[in-house]
Image (cartoon, rainbow over the protein chains, first blue to last red):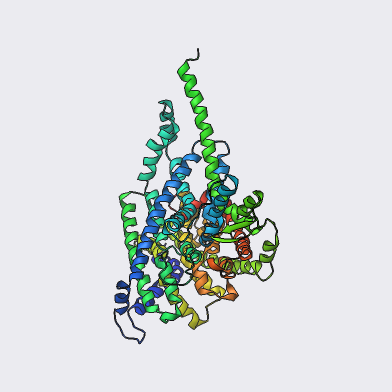
Length: 291
Length: 300
């Protein structure tokens, strides 16, 4: 292939990337560095760094993505363990376990709202088992944070299960046969052969970091929860992640639609996620020939 | 000649298997229960109310609000959501956006995927990195400038505008997955076709492209689900005319915790169920390739 042909092949992609990545980046940078009167200044960034709500949102985002990624990894590995036990109807179980990944995040926000799943459990305990009526205080952080983390993990654990399964399936069968002959239980086989293989796999490391990055930008589930808690579009709710904070800021007429500050914050988030991507690439390279 | 220890092992193995089945069923319950609940709530089947009625109580409590509860299943909320101006229009919008978006994505993505899988060029990693950056960039870095440009160019709230913006989601997936499918074709076939004196274009058009058609179908379905499930881009760049399913489900009801009445709650659940059913159907159809799609083509 001649070099000119190659350029021609890449041209359409670069045009699209120009529209949806390069132009927006430049424009955001420009917006973040100008005041409403058009002067060049870094005041937007200063506003941001002195804003407690922004720093709180950054905290929530970090907590949200770290916790939900770890829970999702745990659940995903557990599901992979179940699927690899050679149970009858394995295909059906696997299909059922995959379902959550297809549900849109905004719908997940509705699924796990205080009035759906939890309510049924409470009513069942009370009316059928005669337990005293338990009062769930949905406004308490000890309730809504775990539920949010769990719903994010519920949605994405199947993905980690699928990746774990693909790694297990590509491990030579002889290893498991040898372990079987020496009397290792299925749990021991999973713990001593599958788990180390999975954790050492660069693909798994890549997917986990990717999950972390996506959760850093999470919007829909916190957005739904902001509603359930009665904050709707009010800035500074306890569940504001960076994305949610930006969304509320962007549409807040009371603050005069501060697109400069929003752009600055979005770029700051991009910076944080880029550091994540750099970590990710490093993991990929040290993990060997993952690409 | 059965020795006691062996029997014990066999028996405990059987116990272990029963336990595994129990765990497997519980895990299925955990995965499926929230989804099922939503479908039932759409029919006004609230299990909480059901339990209360069963116990002869008449007051229910949902999310802290106490009200008189009843148990009257009805398809009315689904029928209402399926009304001409609601769900069907949202689906049509979503499918039109998906169609155009996938077409643009393939137009830009296939040549690159093909080039990346077939030739050694410098800057290959750069392209890969760019596509990864697309994935890591905050949606708001892109959405504000696009919103500004779209309002100036008249692309706001139009299907072409949305189709371009959705490239953020689908383009990396298309390039990475198609690159994998092209790489799966044995080098020999490519070489054999080249030997017969065909031009590069003919080799691509007559030999390589037909071989990745199953891949194209897969990636198309996967991309449609990604666009179907997107909320933020669609919510920011559309308004009434081109609203997509997920935005419609949420915005059409514009509910808050304080204003939930039993009927809007049921409508929301009916609409939510209708929103996830097609996505689940598509995902199950391409189940084997899900890991590959979500990990940007990293897994086999």
